[in-house]
Amino acid sequence: MKFSLKHKNAVVTGGGSGIGQAICIALAEQGANVHILELHSSNAIETVQSIEKIGGKVNVYSCNVAKGEEVRKAFESIIANGKVDILVNNAGIAHIGNLENTSVEDLDRLYEVNIKGVYNCMQAGISSLKEKGGVIINMASIASSVGINDRFAYSMTKGAVLTMTYSVAKDYLDYGIRCNCISPGRVHTPFVDGFIKKNYPGKEEEMFEKLSKTQPIGRMGKPEEIANMALYLCSDEASFITGTNFSIDGGFTTLNGS
Ligand SMILES: NC(=O)c1ccc[n+]([C@@H]2O[C@H](COP(=O)([O-])OP(=O)(O)OC[C@H]3O[C@@H](n4cnc5c(N)ncnc54)[C@H](O)[C@@H]3O)[C@@H](O)[C@H]2O)c1
Image (cartoon, rainbow, N blue to C red):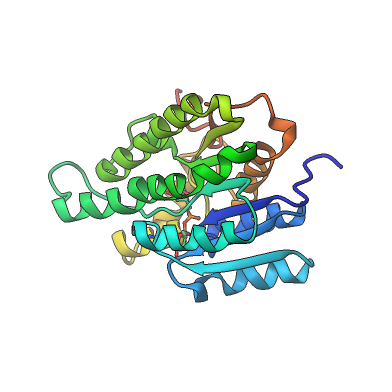
């Protein structure tokens, strides 16, 4: 069977919602044992139910990826039962603001989760991944590569996710570890609904329409569309792919000219 992940252990951060949830389900459908790192294990109930419904295997660990100690403990429990084959660093938080109205507290918060969270998980998982090789996927963004209004802190973090991906891909070539990142355009998830609600109260519908139309394809992406790319990159079918950034953005980065 193509894209089989049978007997593979996959760690997915932020698997309780949106893109992470769709990735967990896609990997479980292909036979992976899925380990979800979530802020609170209760966040992942829906994902767990979906995976159990299809007869898949799933474990959840309450873990803030920004906290090194919590991440190390979660990985110790996972590794005690088998090696890590796949790590998907998906957990991330949003922020709206330009240089002038981004506070240093906001900057640090975004750094802690979106950059240090990725670092913590890769560091905790790397020795296990090195044993027999494996796959790392990092969730970057179109904001990693192009300028987007009012995303100063967010762009900073996603630029770092892109370049950490290149660095790790290069350093671990000889260990059979492939490291890639995915750069989604706007994908309709609670992440998007949350920031529209917070930043544009009373104008939710108007903003949703506006944000949908910024993708030349005319809509936001669906979490499953990102999950299918993640599944491909995790599979042996993608064995020649490392150190690459995949845009999935309805043409946002290349087709926005008139
Ligand atoms: N939705 C989009 O339009 C979009 C576009 C580009 C990139 N992304 C990226 O994709 C990823 C997932 O986005 P989403 O839209 O599915 O988000 P989401 O908010 O729907 O889900 C994120 C999940 O991560 C968890 N999480 C947050 N902080 C955490 C922490 N410190 N430790 C552990 N878990 C934590 C949350 O509990 C939540 O379940 C993020 O990295 C985001 O930056 C999203």
